[in-house]
Amino acid sequence: GPSMDYLERAFDDAKYGWPSTEPLLEITLPSSVDQSLAPPGQHVMNIFVQYAPYKMANAMSWDDIKEDFGDRCIELLARYAPNVPAAILHRQVLSPLDLERLDPKGILDATIESFGGDENALAEQIASLV
Image 1 (cartoon, rainbow, N blue to C red):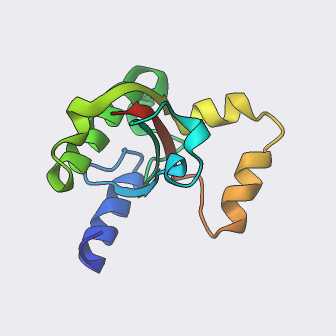
Image 2: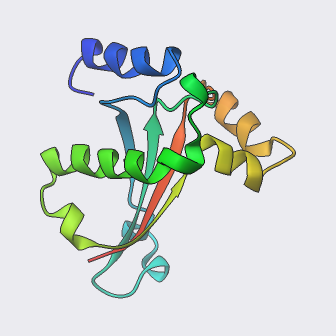
């Protein structure tokens, strides 16, 4: 984030059970080193988003809000890279709940923990950028 205050504010929402209104975006472009991941002239972008609580306040459900949260993340990215939203051809938003569904044995959770993370994470994969 732009400052330590920004990072603290990003976490504040999550500690009270709300997805961050100003999340921290950790972005990788794996197709920049492995061109077989996307067609020529396109890329795959992965965004690991901090902070998105597993347990939501007020009986909110990730199934109901994850696309809106994904939109918020793309809007935030557009502040720094305004051409990206129009270049997205496909996206997949994976909430903490989705990650649990994909990994019922908790392997991903253990991997995230080994990097000092916690359950306040949302992975959003945006594939096939022009």
